[in-house]
Amino acid sequence: MKRIVVVAVTFSFLLSACTRIPGSGERKGPIQDPDSMEYDAETLDSVPVVKEFQIDMEQFAKKVMNVPYVDDVVSTRQHLDIIYPSETIGPYKVVVVFHSGGWYSGDKQSESIAPIVEVINQGYALVSVNYRLSSEARWPAQLHDAKAAIRFLRANMDTYRLDTEKIVVWGLQSGAHLALMLAATNELPEFEDLTLGNPGYSSRIDGVVSWSGFTDLTDLTTASFPMANRLMGMNVKNSKERALSASPVRFVTKQFPPVLFVHGTADSIVPYQQSVEMLHKINLETGD
Image 1 (tube, rainbow, N blue to C red):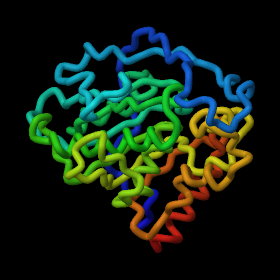
Image 2 (image 1 turned 180 degrees about the horizontal axis):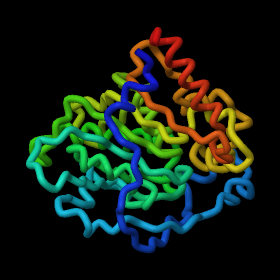
Image 3 (image 1 turned 135 degrees about the horizontal axis):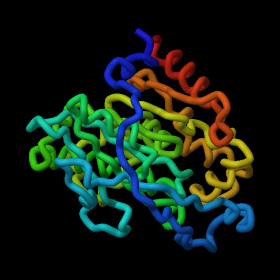
């Protein structure tokens, strides 16, 4: 059984009819402790800020919005939304989505997740998670937030009518990077920040859908190197070891959960070879 098809049979990749409203996008801001960073500021700040449209959440009959998933919120980004199927009562199996945006922009209500909202018509609850952006925190804060969100869902599954025995994570671009890092660091406590809350619950995830995900921060395009520099707070070309510490391809083991990779061959931001190489490594390690 090939791991590339395990999740494929669960979801239909249809463009949803979600309506959208104009969004202002994310604004660049100061990074924490900028004096300690090893990067070329001119190169770092060349990353463009893109305005985007957002999904009109009013179209969903059943939802909860802007739920904080950490005990002590240090950023307005540490919130999630849950969209439910409209005609059933749960508990619902869970798909968690992390938005795109090169780690420096994007939102849990971005129109880019509109096709993924289709899962609610198949009986799943969709949890869309915001995480701290590179404008306010360096890596691994983003991974810590992602793991905190998964722990929160398990700790509060009864409150939100969720079946969290198995959780599938779906990510787009930088969000796919987070999804793959969650998978790669399953059950590795050194990648957790339990001070964010719910330390008695697991951040394990059981499957991944990766749309054009970053898997190796040492092998990027001209367009994406500044994004990675901003995330890491350094020039990743000058410290490949540190860049690899944030690369899912570094942490593949035989316990890696099932993954579906979807990646366009003309991608100018994330080389499609990254998904190909990650797939090959997973299949080699897992024996599939």
